[in-house]
Length: 378
Image (cartoon, rainbow, N blue to C red):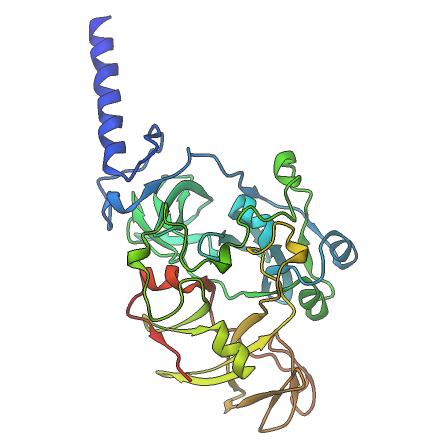
């Protein structure tokens, strides 16, 4: 009996010691199986906010077609859209607010759809990881932890901790491994079905009764109108002052370097033609997509629009674009393009601009992880 008691005491002491290394203001019990001996960030940077398993993950989610989707969701609601081999799926950011992660698979590709409402970060990754010569398909869930106010994910196989905004393992067996980004667009429901009439939209019938009651509701009322992020999760002294903290931005990457563009600049110009190192890119801005971080009832929220980013080279030719009367045209052929990069009229009709891998964030979050990023200026 005594040896067992001693073992139990030692185990509890060890768990307490591990927990103490994290930022754990609620003193939550440490139930994660993460190998903390392997890490590339200080454990004190990671805040334990909720117990493991607090967010119900969407595994093998169900979808609806255009007819059902337009009845189930309102037209201006934002979704994160993915196309693989001509097949398209979209995931409501509002639903993802309640779950944060969806493990899905289509066209033979295992994908990880993620959204962190505190950072407004929506990114899609490939769940297949090539690690030390082994190819593994992982499943993920929200860990209940944050770092720089951004969701920390965990894979269910090893409970390694991963940074959602960067797709990088930061503590555990896979430390320093990186997930590949899958190109995606954040657009409205109506824009998704205009472009993909046969597309599939994540259903509100997820099987989680408590969550289903809250779809269409925003628990972070007026969050995107604040001057700074929630101080409990992010020290306002750490906010990079080059951009307003809650400015929406998109990022692009070239050989490990980053450049970001504000929604304010994109909205002002309608189109941004730019060169970043060797990348010729174009950004389209269009109004008609609402914020899911404004009013409690997201159908009454303000219009923040959307920004999409593409490679501006088509068939070896660098195109330059303009926007007039809400229509995107290229100056070389005067063909007409939509917000998804599809040419629908003119000499180049049927062509599709290649999506430049990018994602949406609040400026404070992106710059906390990537302070060296170049910022687009007029």
